Length: 507
Image 1 (cartoon, helix red, strand yellow):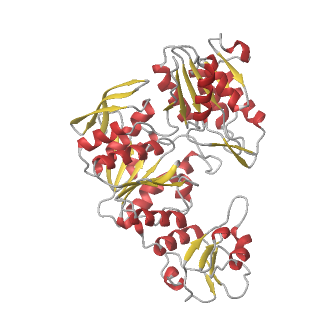
Image 2 (cartoon, rainbow, N blue to C red):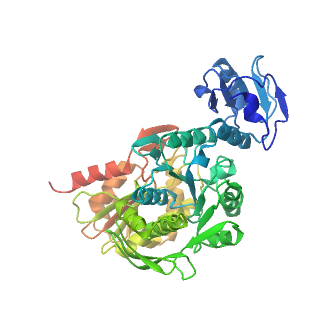
């Protein structure tokens, strides 16, 4: 397309243009390292650096034009488009460049603090059982059929997102489930996606290093339902909302599209009926209107039950039949790093979960507390360079619900691990646990150990576990790395847990 075609009639037109608008644009990029001849380059402002610093590099690599949020000096021969709200412009331009692929798909956005990933996995399984061809865009990866792409961001930048949706259309996808982060909504990444539906799972403390407060965080999430969804060109967009969540209840009152609710009460459209939870899964029924749908799921815990309800409500909104829903739920055997069992023949259970927020950790522990005949042991830490206020809160929850707590490093990033651990430890003490040493942990009924080395911490937790105990390794879930300083080093909780089981259990 020509540059003129890409910017003509933008919702917010450029405030200044310098150069030729009739140049051909062959690709889009926001990273100068991805620029090839014929590229339109977006100089995005960032938290650590500004894209304006890389305009010269983009021009040298063959960019024919740049979009900037403010005036910038550029070498002659390259067109400069000045648009203050550059993220919004990038979204619209990327959708145009790729032919608005979301209009050729059934697109469902899933947002909320916790549960997004599992909900998309269950939806994918239901769609497959219904004979559809699903695609997924989310935290773990981006995928369609047997093809997978690594996920750099939960919700990609518009240039990548629109290109990804176009690839999914080309690959024959009929339905796509997309995790939609609050960052993506605040930065207009999905503004030019035409959604068929949007799902709200819950809202609890997270990302307060990015959002000013919980109200700002909620308003960012709400935009999917109050701004993006109503602007969709799809004929009957729908909203699926967890009405038991206080923020979900508020959202129900604000949404003007068709709404399907899920929750535990009689006022929910989709609700559980006589569901029994065990360490091997969830069994019982889901009420859809006045009809009962029997389910048998290997997913563990109350949080997963909520995710099953969310996926079921979405399928109901899409008019998918009960048999496909039942079969899809049964086929979804596990979700990477979400209450994922690590089997090794032990007389105790070991699970790995991504819980890295106070609410997620508390819910995971409460669910396992009910399923534990012995001691509940948890290994966790908190990420560095992120919301510091949640550290003692998570420590208190772990101490209040668990018997034994092993504090360790998560992704410390550029913070000193010992400082992070001290902040968590304050909460652990408030929760009523006293420190114990490694040697006495095996024979202790209650207490906590601080062990910054995550490998040693996992090994200790598994080494001290007795028959009937449950060990939860929380915080990193599916991540195959640990971030120390600015370096990503290979590290997978599941791999470490299996190795520890092999070393601890008799041959």
